[in-house]
Image 1 (cartoon, one colour):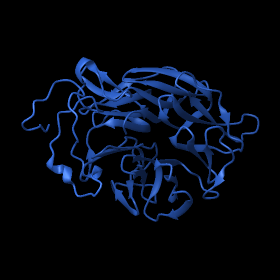
Image 2 (image 1 turned 90 degrees about the vertical axis):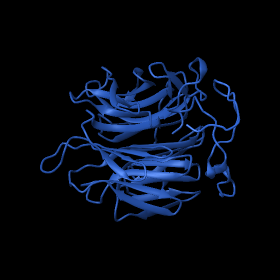
Image 3 (image 1 turned 30 degrees about the horizontal axis):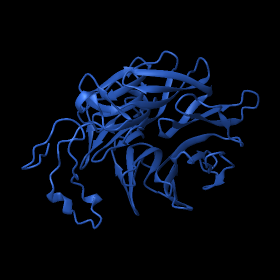
Length: 380
Protein backbone atom coordinates (compact mmCIF):
# COMPACT_ATOMS: atom_id res chain seq x y z
CA UNK A 1 0.00 0.00 0.00
CA UNK A 2 1.36 3.45 -0.89
CA UNK A 3 0.97 6.40 1.48
CA UNK A 4 0.83 10.16 1.27
CA UNK A 5 3.80 12.06 2.70
CA UNK A 6 3.13 14.97 5.00
CA UNK A 7 -0.63 14.40 5.06
CA UNK A 8 -2.84 13.05 7.81
CA UNK A 9 -5.42 10.69 6.28
CA UNK A 10 -8.78 10.33 7.98
CA UNK A 11 -10.18 6.83 8.38
CA UNK A 12 -13.16 5.63 6.38
CA UNK A 13 -14.18 5.67 2.77
CA UNK A 14 -14.16 8.81 0.67
CA UNK A 15 -12.54 11.13 3.21
CA UNK A 16 -9.58 11.88 0.96
CA UNK A 17 -9.89 12.93 -2.66
CA UNK A 18 -6.78 12.40 -4.70
CA UNK A 19 -5.67 11.55 -8.21
CA UNK A 20 -4.31 8.02 -8.42
CA UNK A 21 -1.22 6.92 -10.26
CA UNK A 22 -2.36 5.92 -13.73
CA UNK A 23 -0.36 7.02 -16.75
CA UNK A 24 -3.17 5.92 -19.03
CA UNK A 25 -5.31 8.75 -17.61
CA UNK A 26 -2.65 11.32 -18.47
CA UNK A 27 -3.90 12.89 -21.66
CA UNK A 28 -0.44 13.27 -23.18
CA UNK A 29 0.65 9.79 -22.15
CA UNK A 30 3.76 11.14 -20.47
CA UNK A 31 3.03 9.49 -17.13
CA UNK A 32 3.32 12.76 -15.22
CA UNK A 33 1.10 11.37 -12.50
CA UNK A 34 3.73 8.79 -11.59
CA UNK A 35 5.28 11.36 -9.30
CA UNK A 36 2.13 11.38 -7.19
CA UNK A 37 1.47 8.93 -4.39
CA UNK A 38 -1.87 7.23 -3.84
CA UNK A 39 -3.96 7.60 -0.74
CA UNK A 40 -5.05 4.46 1.06
CA UNK A 41 -8.13 3.16 -0.72
CA UNK A 42 -11.09 1.06 0.31
CA UNK A 43 -14.35 -0.19 -1.03
CA UNK A 44 -13.35 -1.10 -4.60
CA UNK A 45 -13.56 -4.60 -6.08
CA UNK A 46 -11.24 -6.89 -4.17
CA UNK A 47 -10.30 -4.20 -1.66
CA UNK A 48 -11.07 -4.03 2.04
CA UNK A 49 -14.47 -2.67 2.95
CA UNK A 50 -14.77 0.91 4.09
CA UNK A 51 -16.17 1.93 7.47
CA UNK A 52 -19.59 0.47 8.38
CA UNK A 53 -19.11 -2.44 5.93
CA UNK A 54 -19.49 -0.10 2.95
CA UNK A 55 -18.26 -0.43 -0.63
CA UNK A 56 -17.81 2.56 -2.90
CA UNK A 57 -19.55 0.87 -5.82
CA UNK A 58 -23.26 0.01 -5.45
CA UNK A 59 -22.70 -3.13 -7.52
CA UNK A 60 -20.45 -4.52 -4.79
CA UNK A 61 -21.16 -5.82 -1.30
CA UNK A 62 -18.93 -6.30 1.73
CA UNK A 63 -18.23 -9.96 2.47
CA UNK A 64 -18.62 -10.30 6.24
CA UNK A 65 -16.15 -13.18 6.59
CA UNK A 66 -13.11 -11.25 5.39
CA UNK A 67 -14.34 -7.66 4.97
CA UNK A 68 -13.70 -7.58 1.20
CA UNK A 69 -15.84 -5.87 -1.45
CA UNK A 70 -17.09 -8.32 -4.05
CA UNK A 71 -19.75 -8.65 -6.73
CA UNK A 72 -23.29 -8.19 -5.48
CA UNK A 73 -25.14 -9.90 -8.32
CA UNK A 74 -24.31 -12.69 -10.79
CA UNK A 75 -26.46 -14.15 -13.56
CA UNK A 76 -25.62 -17.74 -14.53
CA UNK A 77 -27.30 -19.63 -17.35
CA UNK A 78 -28.48 -23.14 -16.52
CA UNK A 79 -30.59 -26.04 -17.76
CA UNK A 80 -32.16 -29.27 -16.53
CA UNK A 81 -32.04 -32.55 -18.45
CA UNK A 82 -35.05 -33.79 -16.47
CA UNK A 83 -37.39 -30.84 -17.10
CA UNK A 84 -36.02 -29.65 -20.45
CA UNK A 85 -36.16 -26.08 -19.16
CA UNK A 86 -33.72 -23.17 -19.23
CA UNK A 87 -32.94 -21.33 -16.01
CA UNK A 88 -30.93 -18.39 -14.71
CA UNK A 89 -29.38 -18.42 -11.24
CA UNK A 90 -29.24 -14.91 -9.71
CA UNK A 91 -27.17 -14.05 -6.67
CA UNK A 92 -23.64 -13.97 -5.27
CA UNK A 93 -21.51 -15.71 -2.70
CA UNK A 94 -23.45 -18.81 -1.70
CA UNK A 95 -26.95 -17.31 -2.02
CA UNK A 96 -28.73 -17.69 -5.36
CA UNK A 97 -32.30 -17.71 -6.67
CA UNK A 98 -32.98 -19.98 -9.67
CA UNK A 99 -35.57 -18.72 -12.18
CA UNK A 100 -37.07 -20.69 -15.06
CA UNK A 101 -37.06 -18.55 -18.23
CA UNK A 102 -38.27 -20.96 -20.95
CA UNK A 103 -37.58 -24.14 -22.87
CA UNK A 104 -34.14 -25.58 -23.62
CA UNK A 105 -30.87 -24.16 -22.34
CA UNK A 106 -29.16 -20.79 -21.99
CA UNK A 107 -26.57 -20.27 -24.73
CA UNK A 108 -25.38 -16.82 -23.68
CA UNK A 109 -26.04 -14.09 -21.14
CA UNK A 110 -24.99 -10.44 -20.90
CA UNK A 111 -26.11 -7.22 -19.27
CA UNK A 112 -25.22 -3.59 -18.74
CA UNK A 113 -26.69 -3.20 -15.24
CA UNK A 114 -28.50 -5.16 -12.54
CA UNK A 115 -31.82 -4.20 -14.17
CA UNK A 116 -30.76 -4.80 -17.78
CA UNK A 117 -29.73 -8.39 -18.50
CA UNK A 118 -30.47 -10.51 -21.58
CA UNK A 119 -30.39 -14.32 -21.52
CA UNK A 120 -30.54 -16.21 -24.83
CA UNK A 121 -32.42 -19.50 -24.78
CA UNK A 122 -32.16 -22.19 -27.46
CA UNK A 123 -34.08 -25.41 -28.10
CA UNK A 124 -35.22 -27.77 -30.85
CA UNK A 125 -38.89 -27.58 -31.78
CA UNK A 126 -40.36 -30.96 -30.71
CA UNK A 127 -42.69 -31.13 -33.71
CA UNK A 128 -40.26 -30.15 -36.49
CA UNK A 129 -36.83 -30.41 -34.79
CA UNK A 130 -36.15 -26.89 -36.10
CA UNK A 131 -33.61 -24.84 -34.16
CA UNK A 132 -35.33 -22.08 -32.17
CA UNK A 133 -33.98 -19.19 -30.12
CA UNK A 134 -35.47 -16.54 -27.87
CA UNK A 135 -34.30 -13.61 -25.75
CA UNK A 136 -35.47 -13.13 -22.17
CA UNK A 137 -34.89 -9.81 -20.39
CA UNK A 138 -34.41 -9.18 -16.66
CA UNK A 139 -35.64 -5.70 -15.70
CA UNK A 140 -34.49 -5.80 -12.10
CA UNK A 141 -37.73 -7.30 -10.83
CA UNK A 142 -38.93 -10.00 -13.24
CA UNK A 143 -37.96 -11.83 -16.39
CA UNK A 144 -40.13 -10.18 -19.02
CA UNK A 145 -42.02 -12.15 -21.69
CA UNK A 146 -39.47 -13.89 -23.88
CA UNK A 147 -39.07 -12.54 -27.42
CA UNK A 148 -38.61 -15.26 -30.07
CA UNK A 149 -36.14 -14.56 -32.86
CA UNK A 150 -38.01 -14.60 -36.18
CA UNK A 151 -35.86 -17.08 -38.11
CA UNK A 152 -34.90 -20.67 -37.34
CA UNK A 153 -31.39 -21.23 -36.06
CA UNK A 154 -29.53 -20.97 -32.79
CA UNK A 155 -28.36 -17.67 -31.36
CA UNK A 156 -25.13 -18.57 -29.62
CA UNK A 157 -23.72 -15.30 -28.29
CA UNK A 158 -24.90 -11.92 -27.05
CA UNK A 159 -23.09 -8.72 -26.07
CA UNK A 160 -24.28 -5.19 -25.37
CA UNK A 161 -22.87 -1.75 -24.59
CA UNK A 162 -26.12 -0.05 -23.50
CA UNK A 163 -29.80 -0.86 -22.90
CA UNK A 164 -30.53 0.08 -26.53
CA UNK A 165 -27.44 -1.53 -28.08
CA UNK A 166 -27.11 -5.33 -28.01
CA UNK A 167 -25.92 -7.77 -30.67
CA UNK A 168 -27.00 -11.43 -30.76
CA UNK A 169 -25.00 -13.72 -33.07
CA UNK A 170 -26.39 -16.73 -34.94
CA UNK A 171 -25.12 -20.09 -36.16
CA UNK A 172 -25.78 -18.90 -39.71
CA UNK A 173 -23.25 -16.06 -39.79
CA UNK A 174 -25.60 -13.21 -38.93
CA UNK A 175 -26.50 -11.03 -35.95
CA UNK A 176 -29.65 -9.42 -34.58
CA UNK A 177 -29.29 -5.87 -33.28
CA UNK A 178 -31.42 -4.72 -30.34
CA UNK A 179 -32.03 -0.98 -30.53
CA UNK A 180 -34.33 -0.67 -27.55
CA UNK A 181 -37.63 -1.91 -28.94
CA UNK A 182 -37.00 -4.82 -31.32
CA UNK A 183 -34.35 -7.33 -32.38
CA UNK A 184 -35.36 -6.87 -36.02
CA UNK A 185 -33.98 -9.24 -38.65
CA UNK A 186 -30.50 -10.73 -38.76
CA UNK A 187 -27.75 -8.67 -40.40
CA UNK A 188 -25.48 -10.84 -42.60
CA UNK A 189 -21.87 -10.73 -41.37
CA UNK A 190 -20.07 -13.97 -42.30
CA UNK A 191 -22.64 -15.99 -44.20
CA UNK A 192 -22.93 -19.66 -43.32
CA UNK A 193 -20.49 -19.52 -40.41
CA UNK A 194 -21.37 -20.56 -36.87
CA UNK A 195 -20.74 -17.72 -34.43
CA UNK A 196 -19.96 -19.02 -30.95
CA UNK A 197 -18.75 -15.98 -29.00
CA UNK A 198 -18.74 -12.19 -28.90
CA UNK A 199 -17.23 -9.38 -26.87
CA UNK A 200 -16.78 -5.66 -27.15
CA UNK A 201 -15.39 -2.62 -25.38
CA UNK A 202 -17.80 -0.08 -26.88
CA UNK A 203 -20.58 0.29 -29.43
CA UNK A 204 -17.92 0.72 -32.13
CA UNK A 205 -15.39 -1.89 -31.00
CA UNK A 206 -17.06 -5.29 -31.11
CA UNK A 207 -15.78 -8.77 -31.99
CA UNK A 208 -17.51 -12.00 -32.96
CA UNK A 209 -15.87 -15.38 -33.55
CA UNK A 210 -16.83 -18.32 -35.74
CA UNK A 211 -14.10 -20.91 -35.22
CA UNK A 212 -11.00 -19.40 -36.90
CA UNK A 213 -12.99 -16.51 -38.42
CA UNK A 214 -12.85 -13.12 -36.65
CA UNK A 215 -15.41 -10.42 -37.40
CA UNK A 216 -14.87 -6.90 -36.11
CA UNK A 217 -17.33 -3.99 -35.92
CA UNK A 218 -16.22 -0.35 -35.88
CA UNK A 219 -19.35 1.02 -37.52
CA UNK A 220 -19.15 -1.63 -40.25
CA UNK A 221 -18.33 -5.34 -40.15
CA UNK A 222 -15.08 -6.78 -41.54
CA UNK A 223 -13.99 -10.43 -41.33
CA UNK A 224 -10.59 -12.09 -41.37
CA UNK A 225 -9.27 -15.65 -41.02
CA UNK A 226 -6.70 -16.91 -38.52
CA UNK A 227 -4.41 -19.82 -39.40
CA UNK A 228 -3.09 -20.17 -35.83
CA UNK A 229 -6.20 -20.06 -33.64
CA UNK A 230 -9.70 -21.48 -33.24
CA UNK A 231 -12.02 -19.69 -30.81
CA UNK A 232 -14.41 -21.31 -28.36
CA UNK A 233 -15.37 -18.54 -25.92
CA UNK A 234 -13.96 -15.10 -25.32
CA UNK A 235 -13.81 -12.23 -22.92
CA UNK A 236 -12.24 -8.81 -22.79
CA UNK A 237 -11.08 -5.81 -20.81
CA UNK A 238 -13.58 -3.06 -21.39
CA UNK A 239 -11.50 -0.42 -19.62
CA UNK A 240 -8.74 -0.55 -22.23
CA UNK A 241 -10.45 -2.05 -25.25
CA UNK A 242 -8.28 -5.18 -25.20
CA UNK A 243 -9.77 -8.41 -26.47
CA UNK A 244 -8.87 -11.71 -24.81
CA UNK A 245 -10.25 -14.71 -26.67
CA UNK A 246 -10.14 -18.27 -25.41
CA UNK A 247 -9.78 -21.26 -27.72
CA UNK A 248 -7.18 -23.65 -29.04
CA UNK A 249 -4.73 -24.30 -31.81
CA UNK A 250 -6.32 -24.97 -35.24
CA UNK A 251 -6.50 -28.73 -34.59
CA UNK A 252 -8.38 -28.26 -31.32
CA UNK A 253 -5.68 -30.20 -29.48
CA UNK A 254 -4.06 -27.58 -27.25
CA UNK A 255 -5.38 -24.58 -25.31
CA UNK A 256 -4.52 -21.11 -26.60
CA UNK A 257 -5.45 -17.48 -26.02
CA UNK A 258 -5.70 -14.69 -28.59
CA UNK A 259 -4.94 -11.11 -27.53
CA UNK A 260 -5.97 -8.13 -29.64
CA UNK A 261 -4.85 -4.63 -28.71
CA UNK A 262 -5.67 -2.13 -31.41
CA UNK A 263 -4.39 -3.57 -34.68
CA UNK A 264 -1.89 -5.85 -32.94
CA UNK A 265 -3.16 -9.42 -32.62
CA UNK A 266 -1.10 -12.21 -31.08
CA UNK A 267 -1.83 -15.84 -30.18
CA UNK A 268 -0.36 -17.22 -26.95
CA UNK A 269 -0.18 -21.06 -26.76
CA UNK A 270 -0.86 -22.56 -23.32
CA UNK A 271 0.27 -26.13 -23.87
CA UNK A 272 1.54 -28.80 -26.27
CA UNK A 273 0.21 -31.97 -24.63
CA UNK A 274 -2.36 -32.69 -27.35
CA UNK A 275 -4.94 -33.45 -24.66
CA UNK A 276 -7.94 -31.94 -26.50
CA UNK A 277 -8.17 -28.93 -24.16
CA UNK A 278 -9.81 -25.65 -25.26
CA UNK A 279 -10.12 -22.48 -23.19
CA UNK A 280 -13.83 -21.94 -22.49
CA UNK A 281 -13.57 -19.65 -19.47
CA UNK A 282 -11.44 -16.53 -19.49
CA UNK A 283 -11.36 -13.52 -17.20
CA UNK A 284 -8.98 -10.57 -17.62
CA UNK A 285 -8.33 -8.16 -14.79
CA UNK A 286 -6.37 -4.94 -14.90
CA UNK A 287 -2.97 -6.61 -14.56
CA UNK A 288 -3.72 -10.31 -14.98
CA UNK A 289 -5.69 -12.87 -16.98
CA UNK A 290 -7.18 -16.20 -15.88
CA UNK A 291 -7.99 -18.91 -18.43
CA UNK A 292 -9.70 -22.24 -17.86
CA UNK A 293 -10.13 -25.14 -20.25
CA UNK A 294 -13.18 -27.37 -20.32
CA UNK A 295 -11.85 -30.92 -20.18
CA UNK A 296 -13.25 -33.40 -22.69
CA UNK A 297 -14.51 -36.96 -22.25
CA UNK A 298 -12.70 -38.77 -25.04
CA UNK A 299 -10.26 -41.62 -25.51
CA UNK A 300 -6.57 -41.60 -26.32
CA UNK A 301 -4.58 -38.59 -25.13
CA UNK A 302 -7.64 -36.53 -24.20
CA UNK A 303 -8.10 -35.65 -20.54
CA UNK A 304 -11.20 -34.81 -18.53
CA UNK A 305 -9.61 -32.54 -15.91
CA UNK A 306 -9.80 -28.82 -16.77
CA UNK A 307 -6.51 -26.94 -16.87
CA UNK A 308 -6.20 -23.56 -15.14
CA UNK A 309 -3.77 -20.88 -16.32
CA UNK A 310 -2.79 -17.50 -14.87
CA UNK A 311 -1.02 -14.65 -16.63
CA UNK A 312 0.75 -11.65 -15.14
CA UNK A 313 3.86 -11.01 -17.24
CA UNK A 314 3.69 -14.52 -18.70
CA UNK A 315 1.45 -17.58 -18.52
CA UNK A 316 1.83 -20.23 -15.83
CA UNK A 317 -0.32 -23.29 -15.22
CA UNK A 318 -1.85 -23.64 -11.77
CA UNK A 319 -1.07 -27.11 -10.51
CA UNK A 320 -3.36 -29.28 -8.42
CA UNK A 321 -6.92 -30.37 -9.05
CA UNK A 322 -9.39 -27.61 -8.14
CA UNK A 323 -12.29 -30.07 -8.24
CA UNK A 324 -13.95 -28.26 -11.16
CA UNK A 325 -15.33 -30.12 -14.19
CA UNK A 326 -17.47 -29.39 -17.28
CA UNK A 327 -16.70 -25.68 -17.27
CA UNK A 328 -19.49 -23.38 -18.45
CA UNK A 329 -18.05 -19.92 -17.84
CA UNK A 330 -15.81 -17.63 -15.80
CA UNK A 331 -16.35 -14.07 -14.51
CA UNK A 332 -14.85 -11.81 -11.88
CA UNK A 333 -14.38 -8.36 -10.42
CA UNK A 334 -10.87 -8.71 -9.02
CA UNK A 335 -8.14 -11.23 -8.24
CA UNK A 336 -10.01 -11.92 -4.98
CA UNK A 337 -13.42 -12.40 -6.56
CA UNK A 338 -13.68 -14.82 -9.49
CA UNK A 339 -16.56 -17.20 -10.21
CA UNK A 340 -16.66 -20.35 -12.36
CA UNK A 341 -19.72 -22.37 -13.35
CA UNK A 342 -19.46 -26.10 -13.96
CA UNK A 343 -19.74 -29.38 -12.06
CA UNK A 344 -17.94 -30.85 -9.08
CA UNK A 345 -16.19 -34.20 -8.89
CA UNK A 346 -19.51 -35.92 -8.18
CA UNK A 347 -21.04 -34.50 -11.37
CA UNK A 348 -23.27 -32.02 -9.53
CA UNK A 349 -23.82 -28.59 -11.08
CA UNK A 350 -21.76 -26.20 -8.93
CA UNK A 351 -20.73 -22.56 -8.74
CA UNK A 352 -17.11 -22.16 -7.64
CA UNK A 353 -15.54 -19.04 -6.13
CA UNK A 354 -11.91 -17.89 -5.87
CA UNK A 355 -11.11 -15.53 -2.99
CA UNK A 356 -7.47 -14.94 -3.85
CA UNK A 357 -6.27 -18.07 -2.08
CA UNK A 358 -8.41 -21.08 -3.00
CA UNK A 359 -11.26 -22.29 -5.23
CA UNK A 360 -14.33 -23.37 -3.29
CA UNK A 361 -17.70 -24.74 -4.33
CA UNK A 362 -20.21 -22.22 -2.98
CA UNK A 363 -23.56 -23.17 -4.55
CA UNK A 364 -25.01 -26.41 -5.92
CA UNK A 365 -28.59 -25.90 -7.14
CA UNK A 366 -30.90 -28.89 -6.92
CA UNK A 367 -33.20 -27.76 -9.74
CA UNK A 368 -30.65 -27.81 -12.59
CA UNK A 369 -28.17 -30.32 -13.99
CA UNK A 370 -25.95 -27.99 -16.02
CA UNK A 371 -24.51 -24.51 -15.49
CA UNK A 372 -23.34 -22.35 -18.38
CA UNK A 373 -22.36 -18.76 -19.18
CA UNK A 374 -21.93 -16.09 -16.47
CA UNK A 375 -22.38 -12.33 -16.40
CA UNK A 376 -22.07 -10.24 -13.26
CA UNK A 377 -22.65 -6.72 -12.04
CA UNK A 378 -19.47 -4.90 -11.10
CA UNK A 379 -16.15 -3.80 -12.51
CA UNK A 380 -14.75 -6.35 -14.95
